[in-house]
Image 1 (cartoon, rainbow, N blue to C red):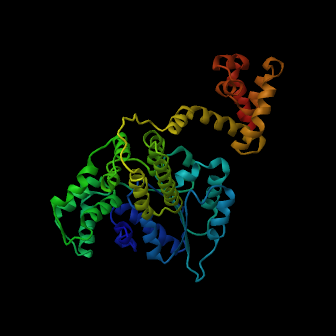
Image 2 (cartoon, one colour):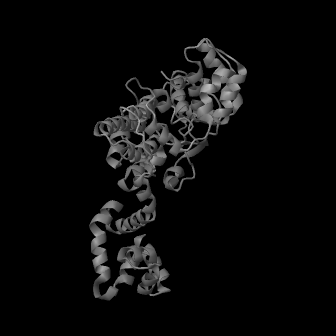
Image 3 (cartoon, rainbow, N blue to C red):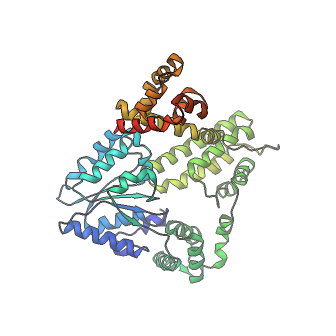
Length: 430
């Protein structure tokens, strides 16, 4: 079991760091118990600062039942109502208050056009039970509607002194003699991330009676910044389990991203069919665990992911390939990067059409956009100004729809009259 899970705080008084934020949350919870319901809380800050942990600890202290969900649970409006609808206005079987916890709200906001975000806002406005949501960036534009109905509580990186105290308590509980200097080194290297610090402690201390400075050598490789190119090369060339599993050490790369890198380069390295089949089998299994980590937020699965995506791929070959291979940047990422502007324009046009046609942006693009293009092109584009005014299109939108340059689009809109048409369109939409 991961120590970060084993020693997660059970009560709010056991929480480490961010004292002012914790006090604000405690006061908010007590006000609810006194019959003074407050606005939902939006806990925001970098990973590893304890946002999830404080919610669990708060529920344990207050005796509240947690109804938890994350981005994968809240794909659309129907899912939100099915999962949170009843919980927002009811108590538990024994009359205890329910705490609605919506994790990773940044990702939920990204599904706004499917109604998930708007349904969450509805819960924030109408819930008769306390609601806490978490995110990374309070000022994210996509969170504007959610932010409007919440009180922000910032979680900052935890100071090294607090982390040292926590590491010493854990080592004492595990009956491991830990030198204070070792705890200080681990705390400094964690850069304010409690979960990372506890994982480092477990890596050097588990199964030992004492830990000294010399035991930190296992972490030194990981602390060194490495290129993802080096990590990929290591996996492709090694047949040793230890070298393969250490390939990801020092990489600040999300699991989904690392899979894409390995997936792109395995076919270039592995030419034997059986080697290739075994490698992709390991990758597919790793992808399953990555999906479960994302959907359930259960980071215990990370250990299985790491082994499959590294040693699983490296040991899939019978022997190393003695050849030079020029490893490649993932093609799928290149395509996403090159099409980013186009995808943003499609979404913007879709939202404008959807607002007038009472449809989601995806439905608007699929069903209405082709017809609008045909209407615009009729009679040598004579109807472009009127159509643009109706939907609130600007020159960039018209250029995109008709496949023309913005200069040409401005001429079709009547030059200076473009602003006038767009203004009328916006007023009509309101």
